[in-house]
Length: 126
Image (cartoon, rainbow, N blue to C red; front, side, top):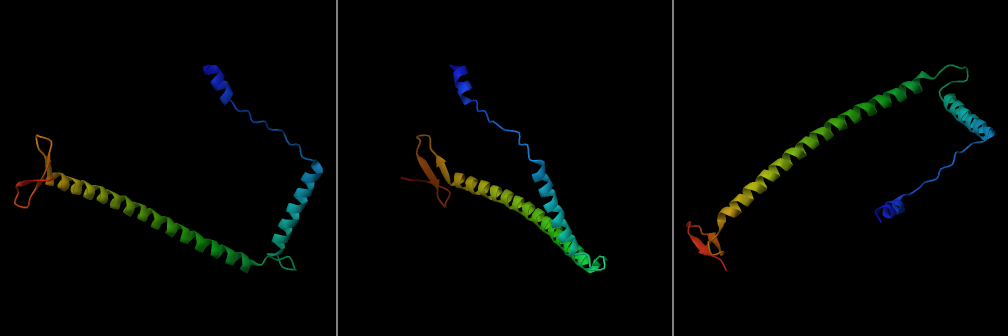
């Protein structure tokens, strides 16, 4: 019975080897080459020289973004630490609150619950 249950849980996933047509692969590579040439032509002027100002601008944007990401990482780390401290404080405060609540009430030997009054004497609660 156990074997039948385990055998019923077996799942086979069939996969096939995909053999692509070499012509399609060549066409895909040609399209990629054309895309890259078009991208490159945005950075190369008519005379074949590279437009450094565009590349410099992109590099500056990248550097600014990197600095911002690093700043956000530091801020996130600080927020995680602050959250950890606040959770610990909350846990401590809840412990103190529970302790004070437990001090206000006491169980008598007969099983009844009594509450400590402001005068320090126990008063019976219904």
